[in-house]
Length: 156
Image 1 (cartoon, rainbow, N blue to C red):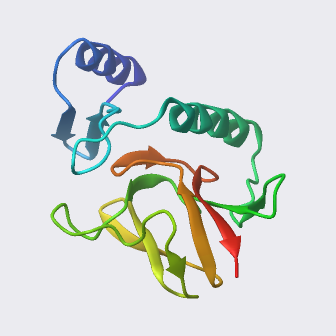
Image 2 (cartoon, rainbow, N blue to C red):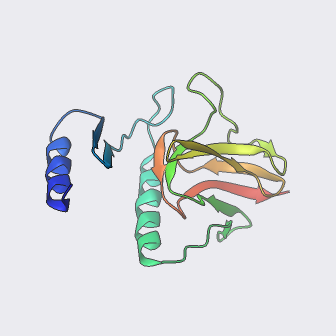
């Protein structure tokens, strides 16, 4: 499949009301998904500052080849946990399950914070240290890149 063909398919897909499109041909698989502002299983919407954080993160990640994937320091004593990989972030193990963590929860080292699906593999994102979840910066089902801020936490 030629790049021009892929670009044409992407352009056509963008003009449809479809949310997802998968094309499998000999030796090639093309999967397209539209970014949705509806993020949680309950239909809650992302806050505008969350979307802005994602946009800023994407810009910085594209500029930096070796993005650090560890916790980032903020101006306060809080730290930001970022995505270590590219994929789809999920707050719960299943659509009908409660989220792994909520804002205000105390988390133990090794406790799951969420899941990042990459290439149909579910990768558990676990706390590297005991902490309190100050805020959750992305919605459920959000596409994330390496370095995308996911959680603001304070160490305990």
